[in-house]
Amino acid sequence: MPDPTSSAGADFQAMERHGWEKAAAAYGFFGRATCLVIPHVLTAARVKRGTRLLDLAAGPGHLAAEARRRGGRAVAADRSHAMTRVLVATHGDLPVVQTDGMALPFADATFDAVAAAFYLNHLDDPAGGLAEMHRVTRPGGWIATAVWDRPERARLNGLIAEAVARAGAGSAVPGPEHPLPEDETGLLHLLRAAGFSRPEARLVQGSLTISDPAELLEGLAGSTVRTAALLRGHSDHDVRRIRDELARGCEPYRSGDQLHIPVAAVILAGQRHE
Image (cartoon, rainbow, N blue to C red; front, top):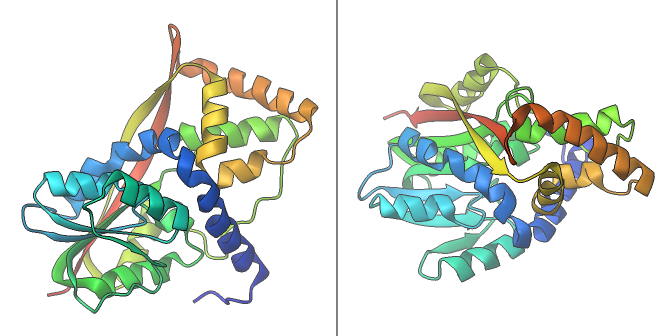
């Protein structure tokens, strides 16, 4: 378990906690990308008619809404005050709980399935997050979540970081004390260590269509936490250099007047022992 007094872990958690309060209102841009994984996550969690589902780190509730369209009975949970308000405003009849996912206010084995479009990337202690998901899942039930793939495939995530680096305008952004493994073997080990059997990891890919690099820069700056932190506080000169480098980086993905930016994620799933 991470040391709660660790500066690295505390700084990362504070960035995530405060950042999502600011990003919730503008999440629509980044939400277009995260929505691409929702059908895959729900399928991996074996959600069907009658499934009691917890949508963890629910954001604006797209996954819970899709689960209900499949006939599931969903509860949405998110830590952010601002995101919870978005949830209630968007899905007024959806049960919503504001809670830290590391200490869920549910009894053991409450849900048939627990799903999260993206969750572990935002934790300082992903192993602890998986353990809590395991606790509230009934024996025989499934959990599923998505994690971002490596930046060379998940270009939506990689392009701006690379542009900042090439512009020589790097910022110190806090990272988790216990980062996620970068390979499938490590991710599957995390699932097994949390008590899940039949662990699965599957790559899914898609693309986000945008008009120009400025839309990408402004969209991610307003609707994410880590990218916003990476871009914060630069001089006008550095911002111009970042924009120029980003434009160059985006060109391989141009088709006519549009850019099709690759999105890639790994869908993780596991079953709680019967």
